[in-house]
Length: 426
Image (cartoon, rainbow, N blue to C red; front, side, top):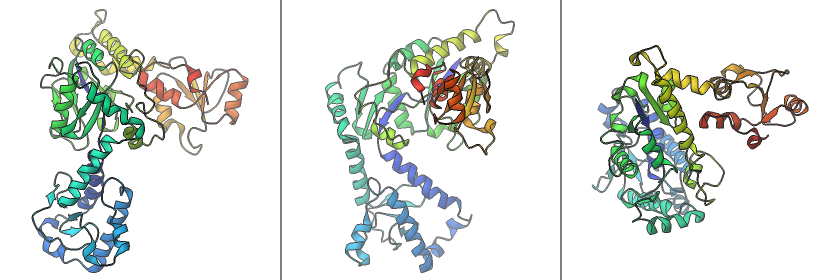
């Protein structure tokens, strides 16, 4: 059997955010271009003044979003002087300055970033500023995390350390607790791959940290350049039949064609930058100076799931040949046992005007084996709500039913086991 997994590490770096932002903003522009755009560069340089002004406004609005850590805040400089030659010209798209729309005077000092966008070029000054900002963001994520740098330096010769400072990549990265035990225990059951949407140099470095003796992965490291579909991961590059592959990943969207093979992992938010990136207004694990549990964390729970699936797949009591068995059916069965016997009524979790059965949390609960309803009766075991004041919430309290918040369902989905209701009170 095969196990394809996203690297179980947490990294802190700002350069990937910048690349992703520009890719999203600029790729939209290029996708709207006509097929003849590349042959009409001269015509585009002669754009009307109105279009240049519109370009200025659009790019200025874009820059405001990322002004503190991505592109220089030139609005302040422009307010100090109205002279057009004061624009620092941080970068150019198709020869036009991102800020003022002025045509580029090519002195050979700029850097083309065609891997982000075919027409993007940044000035050397802006490249140096971004690199410096990236390093500052690494070294000073928050004042609560300054201790990590000292810790990484002190432990750099410890073979069992989990925190690494990768100077060449301007990156601080952390191994998830239990990962070494996880790899050791999973290896006899599965042939393991590393599969990431990052560039190959990053993928190989992470594989080296996870497997320094080259025991588990060997050359089975799949990166962005190996993917056959943009922004999607696929099993077409894995040397194993889909019926025997189990996927571990914290991002469901990249596996649109293989959701039945997927075990969705809870993200590992160790650094403050990770919490910020994904919109969590809470302190990170490092800021709280704590970490996931080895025995009760995400990897320990998933290892138990893998053991059970492996045992079911190779069960000698089954009357079918191994070649006709499908690990996706085993995963489905294990998943359905998680909330088996629970009947859940939802209250004010999603708008009453939408079809309840189409809602993500409803579908998750059903996949976990629960029965779902919008009404309450004596057979209901749980009411999921965000408000203790709703009629269904009050009914749950009066009838001594479990009243939990939606996170109870989500946690059961991540950990593949029913969670203690007292930990998820409304």
